[in-house]
Length: 423
Image 1 (cartoon, rainbow, N blue to C red):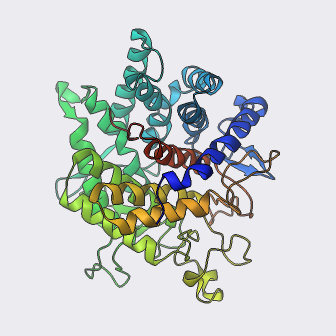
Image 2 (spheres, rainbow, N blue to C red):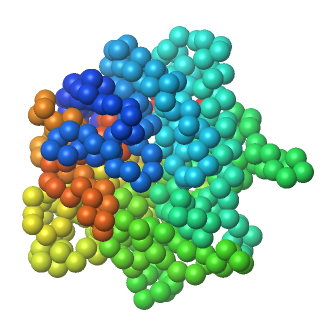
C-alpha cells in the first residue's frame, strides 16, 4: 500500500529536476512574447488565446522555494509577481483569476502566514489588496440563471459556463476571507462567498451528470466542458464543448478541474451534500474511464480510441498513433482524488491518487532531459484546434500542477502544514 512517505524519493526527484527547468525558462524567456504556454521541441513558446498561464510561470518558482527553501526561486516568483502580474488582477475579460492570482499573490501570502517568508506589513497588504481586487473582478463577471442562481461566465460571453472555472472560485473565497465584497449599483454589497457558492452549485447542476436521464448521454460523473444559457431569461439550453471532442463526450481536463475544484471547496466548507455528490461522481467516472494506470486520454469519446482495443485495461500509451494522452489532466485529477480521499477517509480515492502520482513522477512522463524546459511530458492543449499534440511536449499548467501535487504530498510525508488555498 502506497503512502506519501513511500513516494519521497520520487517527490524529491521532481523538485531536483524542476529547479533546472525554472532556471532555464527564466534565463531564456522574453516577457515581450507574452506568457509561456506549451513547449515546442522542448522549449516553451507562447500561444495567443488568453494570458491564463503567466501565474503558473511565477507560481512554479514560488512552489519550488516552498519545497526546497532555495531563496533564488522565491525571488524569481516574487519579482515576476510584482512586476508583471498586476494586469491579471484587474483583467475583466477572463474567468481565470483563481489560476493566475492564487498561484502568485495567494501562494506568497500563504507563505507569509505560515512564517516561511519574513513578515512585512506593506508586502502583506500588497498581496491582500491584489487578492481582494481579483476576487471582486471575478465575481463581477456574473450571469443569472432562471432558477435564481448564477455563474461566472467564461471568456466566450455571458451565455457560457465553463467547468474549468470551478477552480477559479478560490479567488472569490479568499477575497471573502480577507473581508472584501463586490460593490454594485447603489452601493449594493455583494458577497463574494455567496457568488462562489452559487457558481459551484450551477456547475454541479449543469456541468456534471448523475445518470438520471437528463439526456441520452447521461452517464454518472460525465462532465460537459461548456453549458449554454439563454441570456434573455437565464434558461439552460444545452451542453457544448470548446476543447473536447463533442458536447456529449467528456474532455478529461475539464473533468479533472471539476474533481479538484469540488474537492478543494469541500475541504473549505467541511461538508456539503451536493458538492460531495459532484466530487464523488466525477472521481468515479475518471477512475472508470481512464487507462489502467489512471492516466487519461484527452477525451473519453475521442474517435481514435475505437481503434485501440481494451485501452482501459492497460497503461496509457503516449506514443500511440491514434489519440493523445493528457498528462496535465492527470496531475490535476490526482490532486482531486487525494483531497477527496483524505477529506472523506475513502481509501479507494486516496490509493488511486497515490498510484497515479507514482506513474506520473516517473518515465515516460517525468522529464529528466536537461535540454527540455518541460517537467511533465505528454500534455495536450486544444486538440480540436490542432494545438500541441506531439508526444513529449509539456504545458505550463501541467508543470505547475505537477509541482503543486508534489508539494501537497511532500508536506504530508514530512508532517508539514496541510496545503490548501484558503487562509
